[in-house]
Image (tube, rainbow, N blue to C red; front, top):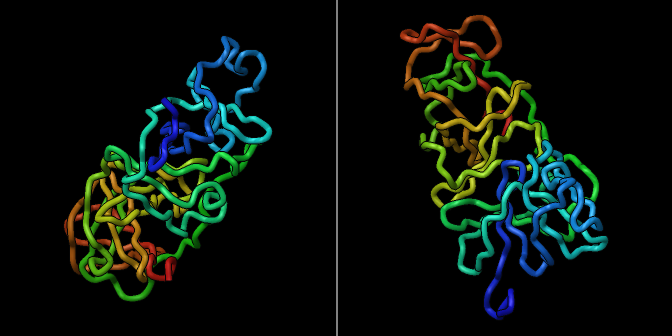
Length: 270
């Protein structure tokens, strides 16, 4: 039975570096286990970690090797091969522009299959040497001036943050449809489809120079026509009447013992 038939679009679904990818089946010539030395296939092809090529961490060995029909031939190690699937009728998303040019050069879209999101990866544009894939940085701007009106207070990586209610669309749990991004660095922890929209999920501590971490809760917001999510480990609640502490963007509110930091999303994304 041929791998690709008329009217079907077969893709190899795989996972590498914590990210799910979809690759056209016609671009794949072989899937196999690596040699015992973990660095080659049949003693002929050098095996490179897909996650490292995309700027991420080394893949745990042994993994699986996917041989791509490109010139020169590229053999990449992935953490697992999920399946070969027909994605013709799957829901497709265009990747948001905030992900930057480095990712756009590799992938323009994502596909939903069995409730999970896969970035569509073009084999012919994959780098043959390790590179950097990271969203462009955003300026860190704090909320100044009058105290915010009613705002949602949430916790992320042990620190409290606030977001004015007019920006908030919904608070949801991070589901299995979530997909991390390849590479490392940047303030975006990943992507998640919700309500027919693909949401980039930001980590506020990463906006301040820390590490982007995907947490259990997502505060979905709409800012200047953009949809984005903020990762949270805990949602504290909605509070009124905040008072400034004198530090940039920092406020207090009755009933919450710790100071709350507000970043100025409107200015950052306008």
